[in-house]
Length: 327
Image (cartoon, rainbow, N blue to C red; front, side, top):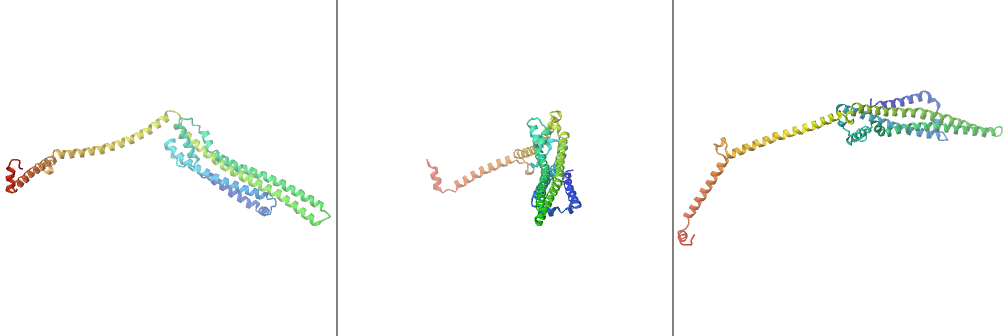
């Protein structure tokens, strides 16, 4: 299920909110955080929010990778590795299969496991960073505990020094000691709950999602793409089939071209026949015979015009033409 990682993440958020309102709503945590003079709880909550946002972004990206892996698996089931349409350059799944095809085309050795770990190393590092933030929160809670105990001891020491001398100073020292105990308690509580439980579970959810995508891609490679990157007869047969499909497409195109050429030659032959033999619709006269008749008619007309011109000239012109050298 592509959205399983995101749904588990949301489910854990709802469980955490329900547990807080069920068990910790009466502890007045936020009131103490608001008046915490050591600011250690502020730092813990700030780092927790950063870890949650990092986990949410990683969870969304892993869910998108899982959905893309399902789509690529469906394409690989139909046509193998070289039938994949890898048009998502920002997805790790597309980058993995593109790198795998580049390795195969270059006659290299395809190490599927190592290539997968290389592509998904960034996601694993992000998940480990979320877990590291959780560990830091636990450590900061312990540091807050030490700071609170230190404040408590300082307050008790001041109250003992003011005992029997200054009642107001003794009360202030006791308030400082109680504030130190609150710091020790709340920092330990926040560090352990927010970092030791919540963030570590968030990190485990995203890590499981990454491993799920990893397993599905490995299964796709082993089941549907193994014939394309292993040097055996199956890969040659599939490559030959693809070449035959391309050749068949070209042959069909040539057949279409030949049919068009045959029609063109047939039309040309008909025109030549009409030129030399003639058309029955024109009383059996060909175009060549009509041109010959037209040429003869023009020659006859030219001769008649010359005779008419000769007859219509004045008598002295005709007389001068009869003399030697006349025209």
